[in-house]
Every structure is written in C-alpha cells, then in structure tokens.
Image (cartoon, rainbow, N blue to C red):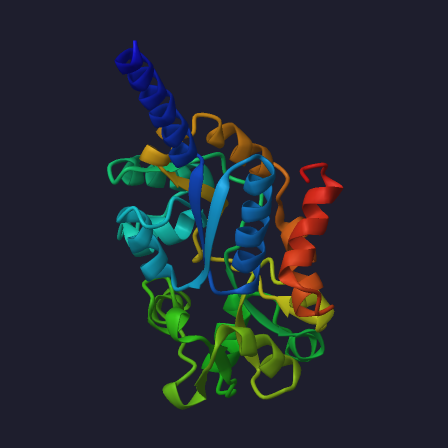
Length: 293
C-alpha cells in the first residue's frame, strides 16, 4: 500500500512540476523604446495570467533572434520585414500579407511560430524638420534625391545597423539613385538621431515610423514613393515547443496583438521619449486601460 501511495504521490508531484515548467516563459526584447515597452507589457500581461516570466530586454536584433532559435528566449515581438530580409535573406519585393506568409513559413522550419500580426507597421522612414522640408519643397524620398543630385549638401543621421543592413542606407541610395556622400553621414545611437535632427545638427534622419517624437519635434516623414522599405508588421513570435507546453498562449498573445496599431504605438512611444514616463508605468497603464491587469 505504501509503495502504491509513494507512486501516486510521485506522479502527482511530477505533474505539478510539469505544469510549473510549462508556465515558465522567457520574454525577450530589443533595446529601443518600442521594444522595451512591449517586453514590459508582455511580461506584466503574462504574469497576470499566471505565468512565471523572466524578462530579458535590451538585446540586439541578431543576438535576440539567435537566442530564440537556441531556445534561450521563448517569446518576443519581431517585425516581418526584419525576418524576411535580415534573417532569411529574401530581397524579393512582397506585399505586407505576402511578407507575413513567407516569414511564417520560413521560420516554422526553424521551430518558430508567427502569431497574428498587429496593425502596427513600424517600418523605417526618413524624416526632416517640417519647416525645412517645406522650404526645400521635399515631400518624398525622390524629392530628396533630386535635391541632393542638384548639388545641395544634406547631412544624414543614421545608426550603425541601418548604415550596414541589407535594407538599409546603401540599397536605399541605389534605389533612389543618389548619395549623401560619406562625409555627410553622421553615425550615432538610434536614440540620438531625431534629437540631432530637431537641434539642427543634421538635415535628415532615419527613424521608425511609429516613433512618437516625430510629431512632438515637428518633424515630417518623407513618403517612400518607390516603396523601398518592406512591411514591418509588429508580431509576437513564439517557439513551437513553448506553444505546445502552453496551449492557450497563442490566443492570449493574439488578444494583445489586436490592440496595437501605428497610432497606439506612436502614442506609447511618445509617453516614454517625450513625456519621460517610465516604461513599466506606460505598459501597465495600457494594460489596465484594456482590462488586462
């Protein structure tokens, strides 16, 4: 009898441990404002749902992706265009839906599952001061290219990643047939590019299209009239093994994804970058607003 009870107790304990293990989620995130907000929001949301969450925020794109492929990160928010071009080396021009379907298929082969994309498309953008763009009659990137090709010198603020990546500066210049010229490219941390533009240290800056500082600093986004930049739909990506261990996780993350769009992300980003509110508080307030906390 004692042996039977021992076996039953052991089985029950094993089941408890298995359940605990299934509820452990490692949430990753990149090192810029939007990603810091999302990693905090996801962590708080999943903890409210009863998961044991470890947050690893502030990582570089390549390191974060490799960590997920290696099983060190279970879940983070990725951009469809980044996976398409940077991780899967696809340079073919695709529609937003085609981009999503392609990366979903390619990454499934690596054990990664793309959940439902949000309506936030945080693609790259070129920005200028609104008054300067108006004075120079620049509304599109083609207008910018024409201005530079006509002999005007404009300085450009870029971070190291955009300067080097395959959907970055060099291919952009090739597509629009112009060059800033190496002396006119000022490389700096991404967080400093828009302040540099605002403060007239440069004439043009790289930005993310959902950056809340664009309207706050009275900047304008130049229209990508040749559609150089691919779609960057913000989407939760989860390891297949993690989903199998946590069968409700996809539905839970899709619920959060459905709440996000360009305006929402720009507003959240502005609360941190412009209003100087804490990332954790901004994420918490958003979740409470939508009755998720």
